[in-house]
Amino acid sequence: MKKFNLSSKQIITWICVNYGLFILAFFTLGFMGSKSAVIINFVLDVVLCVISFALNIGLFSAKYKTPIVGKIGLLFATLCFVAFTYFAFLMPENGLPPVLFS
Image (tube, rainbow, N blue to C red; front, side, top):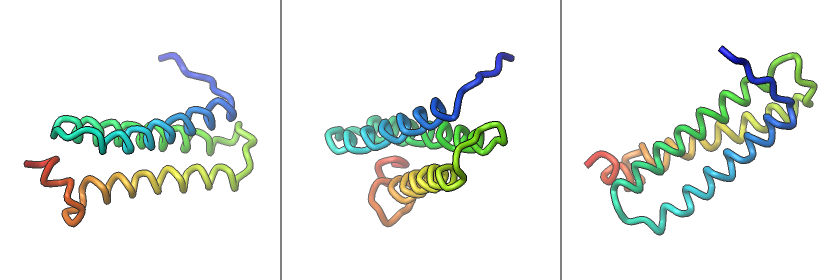
C-alpha cells in the first residue's frame, strides 16, 4: 500500500477544503426539495467529517511541527461539524429525519 506523505500545510489545506465543501453542501440543501438530495447531502457530510477527522488525527503525529493550539482548534472545528451533522439530520426534533427515514 502506498503511503501519502503530506506536509502539515497540505493537511491543513485539505481540512479547510473539507470544511468549505461541508458548508457549501449544507447551504445548497435549501435549494433541493427531494428526498434523494437530502440523503446525498447527509452521506456527503458524513464522508467529509470522517475524512477531516482522519486528517486531524494524522496531524497529531510527532513529525508535524504544527502548534498544539492549531491542532486542537482544527479538531474542535471538525467535532463541531460532526455534532452539527448529528443534530441536523439525526435528531428527531429537527424535522429532517422524517425526510431521511420515511
